[in-house]
Image 1 (cartoon, rainbow, N blue to C red):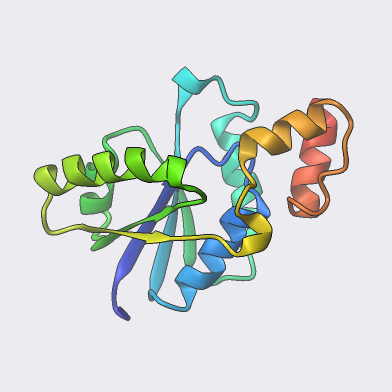
Image 2 (image 1 turned 30 degrees about the horizontal axis):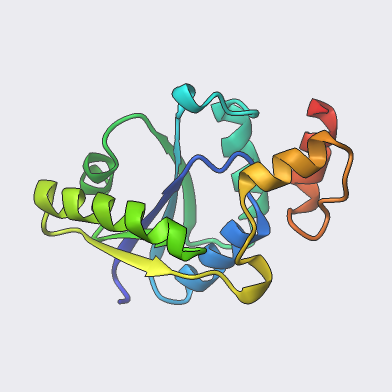
Length: 159
């Protein structure tokens, strides 16, 4: 799938090792990967949009073919505007599958020329989520196995 732009969307609040894992593998498949950070004001994120962008850019600095951008539109419109042919989604568990299949079906109706591809995380990160990381950090737990050192610093500032 070389010469293909892929969009990897999410709130990324915060960016985890699981997210890094998917990006690392996507870089081996696609020529250009856009990590698209959703504004997601309704979710009440811990980190502001600017903070989430800065964190992702720092974490993903070793990957020159990765771009970090934000969006506040329909995902499929963002992907179309950016010339993407693929939306990349991570599936951690069966519970993710139903929601993701529904979204894929709707996106296919809105824009049939953009495909959705699913990647599963490595076993080490299969149960990892941003909300779990926030909860552990909120109570002073060690999240060093789950996030980049940049994220640890930012979480310590928040809590």
